[in-house]
Structures are given as C-alpha cells and as structure tokens.
Length: 250
Image (cartoon, rainbow, N blue to C red):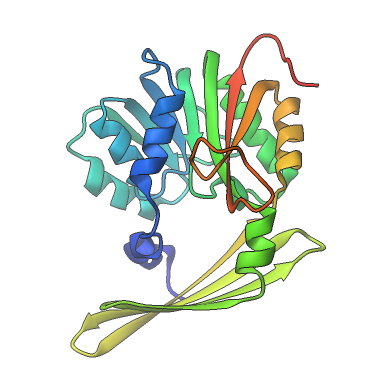
C-alpha cells in the first residue's frame, strides 16, 4: 500500500467534479459583510481556501494530513491572508475566535463516531465569536445507501484510472471504501496506489441532536450548497448553525 503522500498527489483529480465556485458563493452569502475571519477545518489541498482568499477573507485553515497541507501551501503561498496549520478536528486549539467556522467535502463524515462529532461541534462553538456561524456538510444517509452502496465505480481519464469499491455496514452505520488508482507516470507505465478510507453515516436528525448539545441554535439545513432546503433525496446536507447566548432549539 502506498502512502497518503502519494494519494495527496491525485486527490484533486478524484474530486474534480465539485463545483467549488457554487460552494464558496453559498458560504459567502451566509456571512455578513463584517464576517471576514474564517476558520476552515479539514481544508485538504485548499480548494475552498483559495477561493475565499481570492475574495479577501482571512482564513486560518487546518488539516490532519501534512501531505495535504503541502499541496495546499503550494496553491496558497502567495496569499498573505491565509494561515495553514496541522491540527485534528477533534482536539484543535487556535489562539483566536472567528466569525465563521467551515468544514466542507465530508470532513464530518470522517469523524469515527458521535463522540468525535460532538467534540468538533463543541470546539467550533468555542472558537466562534458571539453570533458567529458554523457551516459544514455531510454526505447523506440517502447517498450512502442508494448511490454509493455496495457498488463498484470505474473512472478513466488521460493519466489516471481508478476502481472504487464500497462496502456498507448498516449495523455500524459506516462505509468502507477501497480505491485502486493507476497513475500514469511515463509512456505506458502506471503506478498503483491503494487508498482505504472509512466514513461514518450520520443522519440529519442525529447531527441536529449533537449540535443542540453543543449549544448551537438557528440550525438550517440546505441541499448541496443551494438555497433549496434539505430533503429526503438530498445527496449532500449543508448545515448553517448560529452561535448565540440563548439556544432557541427545542
């Protein structure tokens, strides 16, 4: 099995179908004009980070993977309004409070259990200014069960070929994914990279329960970074949660 360093080299090719412009426009629309300081959790290679930086937001972004951060640094090194850190979603500690905390592209699904998810929400709350907003997404129960399922997917472009195999465990509410990449390195030679990942399947109702425990209120859930509300066939649920002294949720 190859290292995560090698996986980071082809990560962007794996997620090249994401409309980051729509995602970032949605995020910016949820911030007020004075909200300029953002903390980004699980920033990966910086695809959301760079678009926020280009719109003059001040971003502190962190990721658990040093290899991902190296790729992010190469994209972001010319931006003075970006700070990159190597930290973990379940125990991060930053020396300031922010107008917004964001976590995109299934970052929360990589948290292994409800305790870890609650840790993240508690820490996000602690790092927000009063009336700050937490924005994050999850892939939904519907997507995991009806789209990804116990399926095999094959992808091929000029330089990368991969076979993606999924295995669902409904009793544990998780999905295990094995991705075999064949990365073209020269002429007709290919390098094989095997990446194994697990994601936790969280329901929207469970997320709301945990957010309430972390004292977030005014929780609104949207469909895939659009203004449409989340529904039973949404493949990505996007949560916007406001921090306030008074919790109005039941």
